[in-house]
Image (tube, rainbow, N blue to C red; front, side):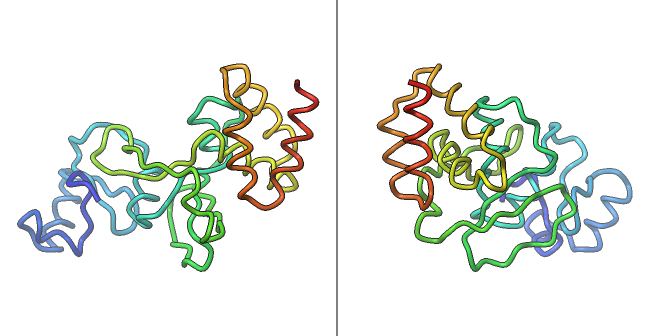
Length: 187
């Protein structure tokens, strides 16, 4: 957690008690982002959904449509932030519009990188374009076939290498066959 985000249980790190933090929020010196998450009012504007996800779960990883949009591989605008956590983890209660997805523990870190939450000191995970495309194909029943196909087309147009995509897809269930089929059609 970056120094810009403060939770009541860590208020002592900033030299204040919980009640001092609550008073600072009431007076306008801190903004309440969500239950138990505060930020200085003069901090740069940032995406509160990303901040809440990163604060609630250290292993939160932006995935699916949200990650494809971040990588500019889709025109779809998600109505909620898609965030993956390892299967078996407790899904946190959040105020932000977050769709929590449970991904298998053994493939959870596949294609995962940490990035800075824009305009903050916090970090959050995000999946690579190749992982996002593979996930879109393997979850096509829920997401629709067009999402993966259109992202694959744009990724190839930008010079994406099918071998890189297939290396990831071969390690995920239900991804390799549909991607091979789509590559044959698009080639």
